[in-house]
Picture 1 (cartoon, rainbow, N blue to C red):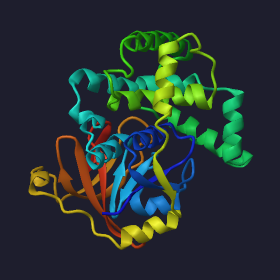
Picture 2 (picture 1 turned 90 degrees about the horizontal axis):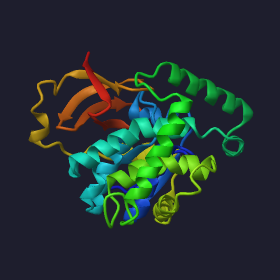
Picture 3 (picture 1 turned 45 degrees about the horizontal axis):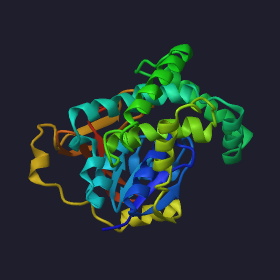
Amino acid sequence: MSELILHHYTLSPFSRKVRSVLGYTQLPWQSALTREMPPRPVLDHLVGGYRKIPVAQIGSDVFCDSRTICTEIAQLANKPELDVANVSGEIQAFVSEADVKLFFACIGQSVSWKLNKKVLKQMSLLDLAKFMIDRINIGRNMKTPVLKPAEAKVYLKSYVADLEQRLEQQPFLFGSSPNAADFAVYHCFWFMRDVAEKPTFGGFEKFNGWLDRIAAFGEGNVSEINAESTLEIARASEPRPIDDQWKQDSAVGQQVSIAPADYACDTTQGILVGSSDDRWIISRSDSAVGKVHVHFPKQGFALKPL
C-alpha cells in the first residue's frame, strides 16, 4: 500500500487538524502542497470539481473531507477512537458542533493584522485579493447559518469556559487520551490563537495547556512530494477492492454527482461504486490518472443521480 499523501496548504485549519492527527499517530505521510484556492489543476485530475482542502490519497483511492481522512488514519494507526463513527453519541454531537458552529465562530473572530501578515507571506497581493473575493463568494452562498460577530464572541467565551471546566480533572476533553473530539476542536482555536494570535483566552490556564499538549504532538513523520508525482502514483495504482457489503444501495452503478451541502458546493461526478452507512465511493476516470475511487462522507454532503 502506498504511503498516505496529504494535499493541503499551510494555513488551512482543517489541514492542521489532519496534520495534528498524523502527529499523534506518528504515521508516515507525504506532503503535497496546493494552492489556497482554485484553480488547482493537478488536484482536479484526482477529485474533479471538489474544492475543499485537505484531500488525502493512497494510491488511486482519494479521500475528501477531514472526517473521511481521519477514518482512514484511525484504521491505519489502529486507533479507532480517532474515527468519529466509533465514539459515543455525546462525543459525536460535540464534534458536529465543532465542525460548523465553532469553526465559523473562530474564523470570524480571527481577523487580525498578524494573520494578514502571515497570509501575505504565503501569497502575492494579487492572489490575496483573489482569495478574499473567493471567500466572500463562499460566504454569500453558504447554506449553513453562522453566528454574527457579537454572538460569536459571547459563544466562544462560554465555550472556552466549558472546556476549562472539563479540563480541570483530565488532560484531554473526554479523558486521559485524545479522541476525535480533541482534534475537531483543536484546529479551530489553533487558527485563532496561534495563527491570528488573538489574545482572547489568556486567563484559561487549563484550556491553553490542552492546546499546547495537542500542539506538542507535532505533525508526524512527513516527507515532501511534488504535486505532479501524486498523479503518477495514482496512474500506477489500482483502486482497492470494494466488498459486496458496500454494493447494497440501489443507486450503486448509477452516474451521480456529489457535493458539500453547506458551503463550497462544487460537484464531483462519477459512477457510484460503494455506499455504507457513512460513506459514498464514486469511480471516475481522467486521462492523467486513469481510474480513481473518490471517497466522500455522507454527513455534510449530498448525492444526486444524473
